Image (tube, rainbow, N blue to C red; front, side, top):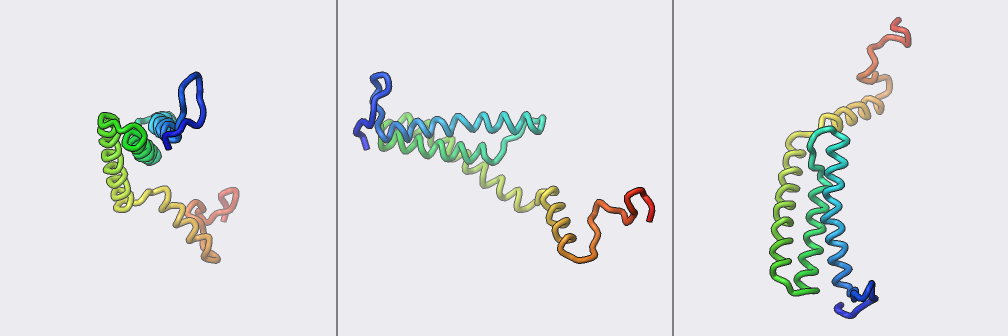
Length: 133
């Protein structure tokens, strides 16, 4: 996998370099995901996609530095973020399992009411369109 596939401005691109470039792209894109989530919620938020992009980017970069370049500094500098990201994913999954999302629970309850014939939705109060029974 060290054979040059093509050249870009006199830089030889090997399959391992493509793995490294993709790892950098994934690792960098996590910040755009985080910025989008923060802007959408109008508060600082680290979405689960941030951690998954961190894990995937780190694994690809560690692979590149291990097999493509044999660089111990690159291995160490990218292995640590992978461990932190995996830890944060585990904590997030445990937290979500212990404390379900209230919006998801509301949707489940609404679906359960829809399935039962004759059941009213939580948003209706039993009155007609203009507040009359």
